[in-house]
Length: 51
Image 1 (cartoon, rainbow, N blue to C red):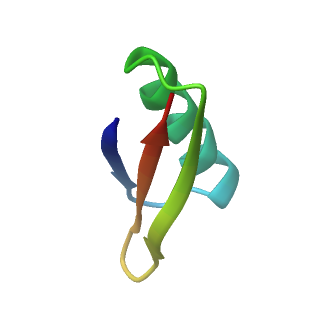
Image 2 (cartoon, rainbow, N blue to C red):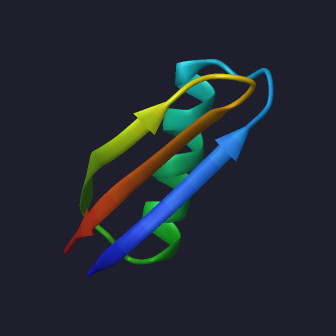
């Protein structure tokens, strides 16, 4: 049904997961699959949403 992305400075992987969960639920998704994740100066992840 779409994608969502999150990014944060000095976050843990669990913080990113929680943020993805919140965004997925807000979009009405029943599940999601992380299609991109990277670290560096900050964390970034993109997930594909499913109904």
